Length: 401
Image (cartoon, rainbow, N blue to C red; front, side, top):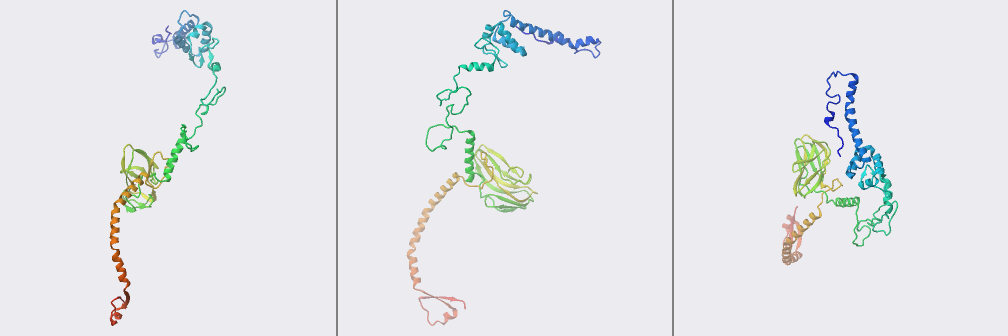
């Protein structure tokens, strides 16, 4: 059964819209014109809808009671929901109970309770529904809990949550849950350990350049990875730190002194990444990339003992502070392997040198003997000339007068 609707045809010619500027109507006619849509359109349509709804409630033979129709009627009723529910309950308890199974509207439970009643608040129905519930029991418990139950990991059967290896050193096959905050703390601890070991800063040192003066700026290599700059730049000038390769990752780059914008910067492959007004920034590489890092001082800038502390670290590292460069374990291993190879190549040369030294042993011994039979005498030229005879086993040294 269609419900009445207000259409444009119903309102055509109604109301004050379309009246001339001077209506030429009496005061009563003008007042009536203002109320025309309400009196001639809205009130009749509303009454028609009301009659139809009354028919649904009082005359079961005029409509078919279906969940869809009843739900539509109840929703359309709006504020009359409780009144409609009571009338339906009184007039058609059995039919309505069958038709409204499972229907919940506006927080009112229309599902009949055990006594065949509807329109029972949901809060009251919960008590009835829970009557047959034994309680809550976790897999680690043998009995059900009733009443107010506090759900914990223990009564859910999860047992004591802990981190493997922290509680004891005994081996086991249990699975433990690690809370996110504990996990983050452990990760940060790993990065912190790396920081103390200095294997964090990817900017390799020593740099390609060292202490120098260029365009009025004196760059001083402090010997630990920091660079101090003094002077006034007559032109743009750079101090090249060096080139190195970064693996695919997100990095944090920082270390430019905060002396103000437009004075200095740290550049990557010639492009400014951080300036004298920026603490740091993110650089991300999706492929292995070789970068060239440099310090730049702009023309006209005056720096007074400004210290550059360039560093590049992983984004996961929360300790965003300068640390001196140190080789990673991988780099140290490669260097050790290279040293071992070089040592192996020198082994043959060392062996040959030992043979050569051995061959000279006899000659050295003979020389010792010869020197042992000689005498050494230091004389002036006059004294030497005055000798009547010269001893063949004596070495004479002529000294000044």
